[in-house]
Length: 172
Image (tube, rainbow, N blue to C red; front, top):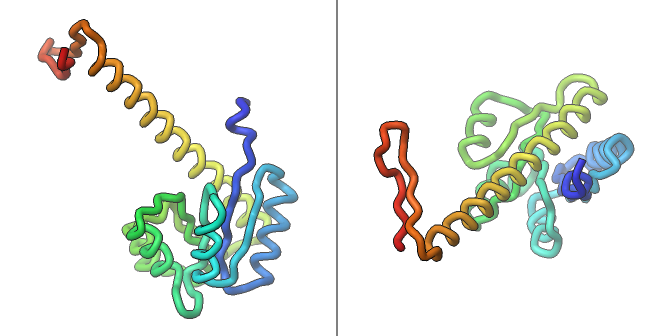
């Protein structure tokens, strides 16, 4: 396991049920020491926390007063925030799941089932979304290095497909 994988994962969990927030925080920390969970009891409070603290992932309930989870997600995405987002709700309907995913949620989970299973699935989902984000970022950085190299080297660089057609020729 490399140092990057051991790095603490900062989670913001938003739900209007304080008891559920407390249970989530205790369970995730107890069984997953690298997960550091902050909580907010409303989408508005979540937005404030996001302004002042950097998080790796957001978990949000759907049904909350004033601003629901979908409106919260839409607000984030319209503002250009690409933070991984997990919708975790007890009031699951297929239409809500589809809308959440269409608006940019990475995952949609329901609170049903036993608590042990739910929090195990949630911890796994958090790690999965973080791994994907890190892989995409590593690929982006690698492509940027390759692009800079290809654009600035004095020699001509080219790539071809299996039919020997040029797919890239450097500007040199």
